Amino acid sequence: MTRSVIVGAKRSPMGKFLGTLSPLTAPEIGAQVARKLIDEVGCPYDAVDWALIGQVLQAGVGQNPARQVALKAGLPPTITAVTVNQVCGSGLRAAMNADNNIRLDQAKIILTGGMESMSNAPYYVRGTRTGATKFGHATMEDGMLFDGLTCPFEGWGMGHAAEYTARKYNISREDQDAFALESHHRAAAAQRAGAFKKSIAPIEVPGKKGPTLFGEDESIRPEVTLADLQKLKPAFEKDGTVTAGNSSQLTDGAAMALLASEEEAKRRGWPIRARIIAHTTFGVPPKELFIAPVGAVRQLCDKVGVKVKDIDLFEINEAFACQMLACMRQLEISHERVNVLGGAIALGHPIGCSGTRVLTTLLDAMEARGVRRGIATLCLGGGNAVAMMIERP
Image 1 (spheres, rainbow, N blue to C red):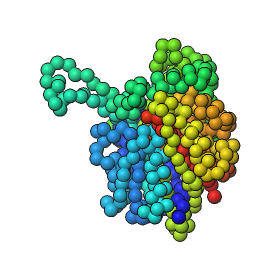
Image 2: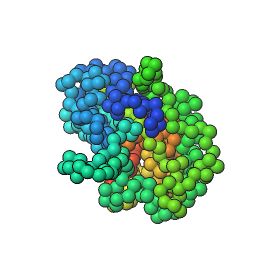
Image 3: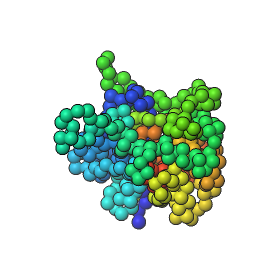
Image 4: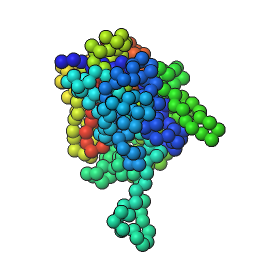
């Protein structure tokens, strides 16, 4: 069976909620990243067989957002395009599906990725089609909150699930704030050192005075202090420990990776950034979602025949600091091996984009440190986690 490899990965800068990227739809951001990635690799546009792209908040975006990305990026209309929704894992699931298709010889080259414009998520008014609001007031429902950040089984938001996790695993407010501070400091240091420059595709944003080029993550807070974080009130429960400061940020962005069979990559003379070794999905009860990466990582290591201690670097999506601390403690891994360039608390968490973003950042970190083996993993609303192991040649 053939093996798939990653020949390129790029991402947009992460834009604040209602910030610089908000004039653009998710497919518009995604198309710019895809075009720059394909051009950088030197791949002919007509050589790409499939586009598999994740997005969660699809309401109001139009038919098949992945198809929109493909054609806006200049790929031919003959391409097959599929939009993937596995909540926060959508971007990594797209890469997992791409790997499966390449291994089964269904395709040789696949554009895979994830994208989200949380700024453009619509509000819903239910019952208007059936006439339920012919007279009187109607209630508006936040589509981002309902479709992206609320558990359909427990009926609570992700912040309440984080509070449950913090209580169950005895994660203190002090430890959460300290973790959040480190995330910002690592991301700020990486930004200053130019560690993200290789992977960031600057985005052209329209404006009244003409287009501008947006080239740096705007959610990182390099000057934040522990005292700043300690001043914040609990965001979800009156006596809770989870705040806006130790949670991931609402963000807009896109990330793309180009996968190919190893034979095709070698035939075309493309450098291989990493081989995809294996991937897995793990499930837990919905309210336990934030601990699901623990099972996913263990299951993945068992599948490959290695131990957790054999993994050089991890990228675990930082939904909440308490989630990160619970997972790291259960896996018995130190912070020195996890999210070494900062994570979603600093960079942001554009839901459908994050799976590919963490994969891209993992590649950056592994190359910078010269290490061989890494795992990218994310927890998902509903009680799943996805994980992928990659190795540098």
